[in-house]
Every structure is written in C-alpha cells, then in structure tokens.
Image (cartoon, rainbow, N blue to C red; front, side, top):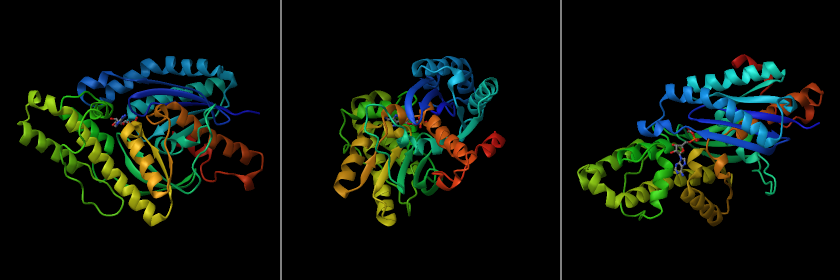
Length: 349
Ligand code: KG4
C-alpha cells in the first residue's frame, strides 16, 4: 500500500505544505510573507499572524495539486523546531488538529534534518540520484551555517558551525545597510550579476577548524560604506552592483574554503548543499566547478526545495513513518533508519 504524507512547514516566514507519495513529490506549495521586507528582518509576531492567515489555503492547495483528499493521507508531518515559537505553534497546532480529525499519526520533524535530507525527494521525470552515505552537507540559511557529516538519515554530526552570524544573515544585514529590502540574499545576488566581484575586498575570518564567522565581514562591509562613500546612499548607488558582487564573492569563498578543508580531513568526497542560501546561483555554480575540479560528487537541490518548504518535511515524515511501520510489522532487522520513533515525536510536541 502506498504511503502518502503531508508535510507542513511554518518555522519562520514561509507557510508551506507538500505532499509526497512513497517518497515521490506530488506537490509543494509555499507562501512567502512579504510584510517583513519593510522592517529589514522577520518580525516574529507578524510571522505567526501571517501563518494563521495562510495555513488553511496553503494546505488545501497542496492537497488539491497532489490530487489527494485528507482521508487518503497516511500521516501528517510538521516542523516542531528549531524556529520562531509563535510560528511553530501555528503549524504544530494546525497539524495536531488535522491529525486528530483524520485519525492519522502526527510526525514531528526537525527543521534542520528536513533541509539535510532534501536530496532524497524523488521528482518525477528527473533522475533519482541521492547522495551515498556518508556525505557532507553544507547547510546555509538565514539562521544556520553548518557543515554536517551525515552518516545515515538519523545519524548526523555537526563538524563546523558559525560562531556568530549565519551566511544568510550576512547577506541580509549587508543588504539592509545598502537599502535593499528583506530578504537581502536574492536582491544581492540579482545585483551581483552586473557587478565586479573583485571591486572591493572585505575582511575574511581567521577561525580554526571548520567553523565559520561572518560578523567581521559585516563590520568590514559597513566600514567600506563609511570610508568609501561616507555612508551616503546616493553615492553608493552607482557602485551597488560591485558591492553586491564583492560581498557575494567573499561569502562564497569563505564557505568553499571550509568545505574543502572538511573534505580533505574526512576524506568524504561527497558534498550536498541545503538551506535558503543554496538558492544562490553563483554558489551553486562555484560548488559544481569546485566539485569537478577536485573530483567530488556534488548534490544541489532544486531552487524551490532549497528554501523552507513543506516537501522536505513530508520526506522526513515519510522516512520516520516507514521506519515505524516496518517496526510494527516485525521487520526490524532490515530497518533502514534506526533511531527516531513516532512516540517521542508525540511527546516532544
Ligand atoms: O532556509 P531559509 O529559507 O529560511 C531561514 O533560514 O529562515 O533561508 C533564508 C535565507 C535568507 O537569509 C535569504 O537572504 C537567503 O536564505 N537567500 C539567499 C538567496 N535566496 C535566499 N541568499 C543568497 N542568494 C540567494 N539567491
């Protein structure tokens, strides 16, 4: 019998729902809140209210596009954290209500695990080639910058992380300083297309191991605005593309340098990219080129699976659901996933 999972994601400012059948993508519907752009960052209270308004239409549309009715679902997966508490509460409360009314299991999914395993979603008409274990995942988003050694779907070890700002945060904060709206990453990368990546040189961190730091880069960016333009936005305008291209170039250099060091030491030549910043075209290109040059296998998610989305939550729900189903049919010895069960998931929520 097929396993059909609805995944719901509301950890930050995207209300998203996706449906997967036996791991194959049927739908992925995302509503990105625009209200935050004028505040230069996500306002938690507004984000929670936005989810309240959109959760029903987004879930309805995801089911409709998938051609699935509620009764056909095997389970409902939802992000339980990490994320903004008000936003998470909307998604988890909605999912709980749906699970009770349909009498289907509720599966709690860790947001970061969902990003890391996004490459295991099967998309019709595309070759299915997920990473082999173990692999390294560079998870770059608005809240996280991590290098994770992924040994199995449930065994993940963080080997590097940011000591201050995340890469997405660096994009967003620098973008705000030059008058661009939130989220700054997509605006910076659009403007960077016409700029010179070597026009400005910003400070690079001197952090040992595989850890990252972006706060020095942010300060150096602000000093450049002050020293070269006296902070005057009119003077910045003609050079905005060069500023964006140089910023993007520096962030990507910092990321790739640490990934290369991690591959060298772990001797794992498989690198997967995940998280919102992985939508960045230049990062995708540079990682592909680096992979070709160094002989790594590189895995890059589709753009709408890079940022927060319900499909990645459904995939994790599917893995957890099938693990539990296999256990119940006493086939434990051939379980592909060994740790998480549905029970703690219920309790944690
Ligand atoms: O994973 P994600 O959707 O959610 C959170 O972390 O909340 O990531 C959002 C982050 C933001 O910082 C945004 O600026 C960044 O991803 N981002 C990008 C691009 N698209 C989104 N950064 C650089 N280039 C992009 N094209």
